[in-house]
Image 1 (tube, helix red, strand yellow):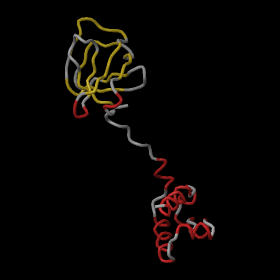
Image 2 (image 1 turned 180 degrees about the vertical axis):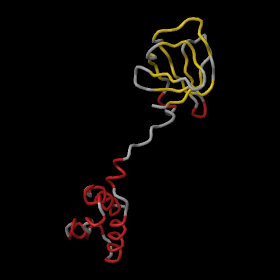
Image 3 (image 1 turned 60 degrees about the vertical axis):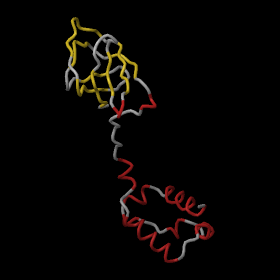
Image 4 (image 1 turned 90 degrees about the vertical axis):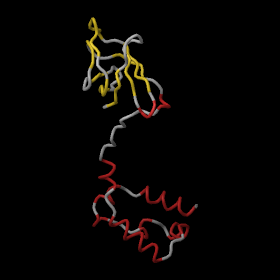
Length: 151
């Protein structure tokens, strides 16, 4: 276990520049001291195989530079979202996007409602439901819109 942890730590500490181009790969024997190599405990064959695999791996810099996809649903453990809508709300239908003051954007998936009067920057609550569903509530006396987070 200690050997695996040391090897993983060593691999994670490699500079992204060394990974950015395959021709710039520096073998582990040149990166680690003899004592460190001995602590890892790899045979010559294992070390050779690991060097070959690492030199052919996809560049870490490219992987690190790609943005992580935004989650479609917040976990239930985070609880409801309380905020204000930016702008006016006259109603909603599938496709309506609510932009909140906290920066989140929620899009209506199901539900339709026309309000009697337009609300200016109303307070809202986005509450979790079962199976990853979320519902936007403008007023507790009005039906909720089923929504999903887009930002």
